[in-house]
Length: 154
Image (cartoon, rainbow, N blue to C red; front, side, top):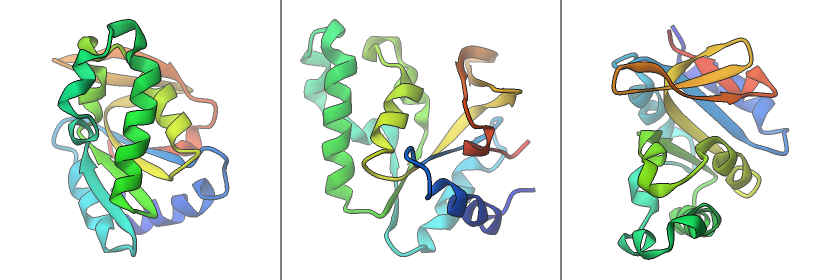
């Protein structure tokens, strides 16, 4: 079982990287959300829901322009949180086809500005990170260069 102490230990490694992104993965009910809520005791660590990083006007942006605009909008939302580390829960929202995003690339870019921890429903096989959605354990897949940026609760 992964504890908040395990995450903090791993975070010391992540904090030295250019991309300060830690992905906590597990299946439904594995404790991802609970774990990141437990980390809010850290000074300056704040949690938010992925959907709260967007305003209603985002959907008025032409679909082709959304990936580029999403980064600036989310960056502004993250800066408004005034956090040393932002923890994003329910990241599945970022996979909505209407948003037209590549969630992992977007999170990696954003983590260069502000350290990010996300809860991610899925699993890791070697260097392939899978996102689980609607019962499909391989709904989306991404290559991870450094598996140390992923912690599995399963």
